[in-house]
Length: 143
Image 1 (tube, rainbow, N blue to C red):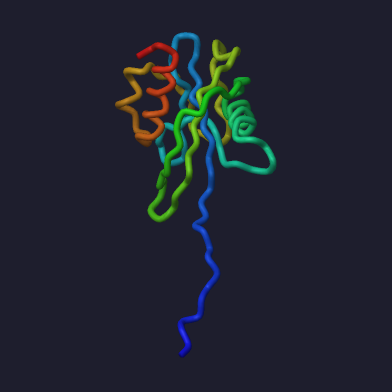
Image 2 (tube, rainbow, N blue to C red):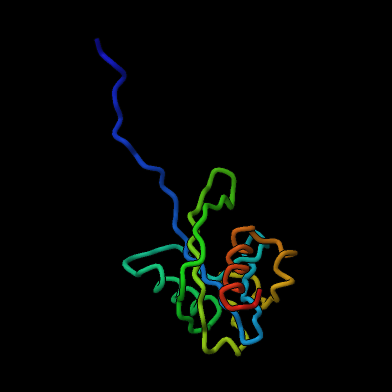
């Protein structure tokens, strides 16, 4: 008796995106507006041999001009930005000594903004980002 031909196991593939929650000296979070007109945290896809922490630091520098240091892991979650497309999101709490300077908007985004904790819930952005921002505020005693 012959059974159906067995195919080797192929795990699902999806990109991994590392994001940073960076607060300025007033406790406002840095957000960037993407091509879908949603606010998002600075960051990007894992590439090459950088660690996730190194990658998020690189992305923050490239996307807004701040020199950040990745701190604790805040959250991991799956996001579906477009139907049928999933991205694995990893967020880190970050600090930037030069966060007193206005952020510079890169070619990757439409605009940059600094938002208070009370403004974040009303923004058009994924709930996972909002949760990560709240978590970083709690760790900083700004609950």
